[in-house]
Image (cartoon, rainbow, N blue to C red; front, side, top):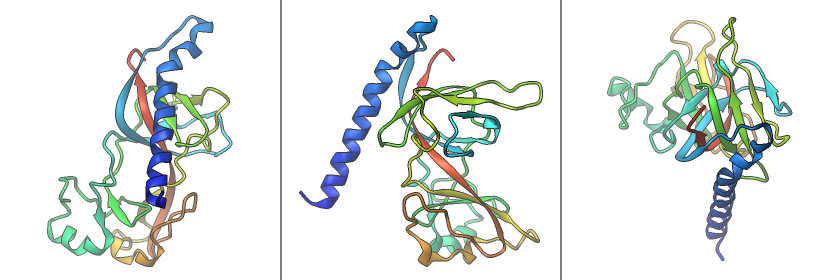
Length: 218
């Protein structure tokens, strides 16, 4: 079997396992009397920050959600001039922000996720060995949103290592940070590797968690 076909088969098997887990998830909560009901969703993506070893933490209000896969909607770095000429409006109709922009592992300029990630329960996976329920709690009086994973999973377990994403903002003046300065030879970024720095920019790498189902009664 050709490598591309083998890769496709592995991805389908991983997706199948994730979906099977999604259907079984309510049973995992039966012991405490609460059985959330989950529904499958067209794949969504969470942009997360945190220690890879963490199973719970704070500041989920700094996490974002792509409800639609941003990859196919992205603009190649080589097409940045055309994006500028269009007033920053991408072919997929999202608006580029020169003061706050995103890149993914293939060198595509992406639309930003929606901030903040809404409270609720999400079945997340990295398409590897584990899937888990991510619980994001409502904001407390200080605006902090706690999060936690079940099944002894940590952020590394549910991070899609092949999906890389980073947020770029000006390090100096407002015109100091541009996709035109991005090193196109640095793409594609290897699985698990950091996104490349861009001259004149501050960079924040985000973990990418794949969402396959959400609770309907959170």
